[in-house]
Length: 309
Image (cartoon, rainbow, N blue to C red; front, side, top):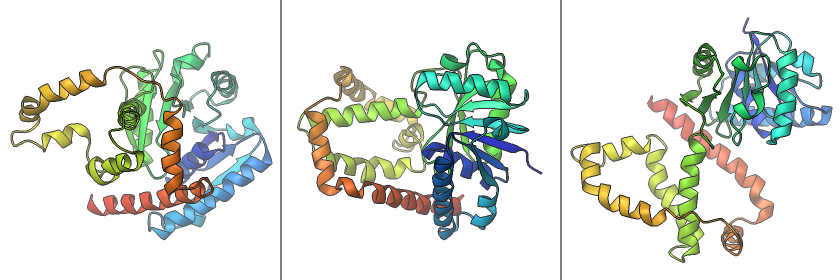
């Protein structure tokens, strides 16, 4: 029988992780502080599983759902677990408090992973007795659809723990990338910051509107990026591969990068300008429905990618 996994925090990220672990055959105990939060999470999980089944991405949603139980007792959630995935509110004090409790209550051989996207693991695990077994396993939302996981060891994380975490993610059919050292924002957020910064800049400078900017990604770069990364993209975009590409475009790209080097804050009236453009095409009361549309669209892309591998 597969060993249990604990998910601490039943919000959006925690619900997604629960599906990932249960889908791979692990019994999952989902912890939060109130029965209401647990009930809401389990209902959302049932809906997500039904959507996955409708896209033939899982065979038996009821079987997966049966592996997930909720509890408001942290000690019970952590009993005999193999892995703990922390998904609590993104505040440093909250992270420190919950990791102190998890380190005391979890089995000594359990790996303690954080879903944090803001803080390095070293910021909230330095004083723990079991700090050697702590690391970041940062998902891309929703993790049951987007398989990438950023594994970020702290300076004191055991190399064996890092390697076993990578192997565990592979066993879940996630796609782990392992950072060699901590860096603010990790990898995906840093790439996203670079793109968003230029996107806001172009709108602020009246070069393009927000809606057309989105089209540049959705119907341009994003089509390639859905199945290959930036280095492979440019490797295939010059007759002689990546070196040929750099020889052709390295200098003009450098000149653009120099032009972009001054960072700008995303402040008013720029934020209002972009928001107004977005609300014209998507009223605020339709955001939640559009989020589900996004997830269903992602499912169709994932299903297509699976059929081609």
